[in-house]
Length: 116
Image 1 (tube, rainbow, N blue to C red):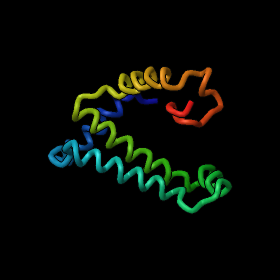
Image 2 (cartoon, helix red, strand yellow):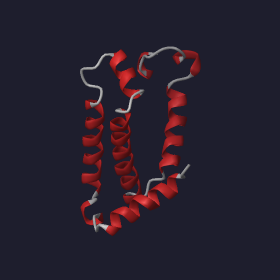
Image 3 (tube, rainbow, N blue to C red):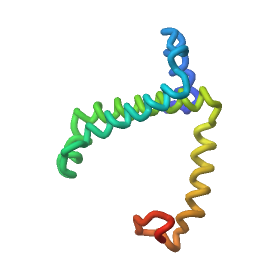
């Protein structure tokens, strides 16, 4: 199992060996995340829940994993570029969500916080 730091170091090494950092500005990294998220969605488009279950439990699962990896790579590069500690950002967001979605009001409920 790799740590986030080790993974980021490997991504940066890969990027730098190819001299691609000059292409990785904030705007284009953010755009790339959205593009790759769209490609992930395509894996599920027009499929029933049964077909999706079959997909995620088959050899074709690698397509989903590749798109998730692409999203994650661009996300980590964006975080590195703008100096965001992803784990801290996630923990901070979870704290905000705990306030917006208290267990007493949101357990088993899919409503948005302003509808609780």
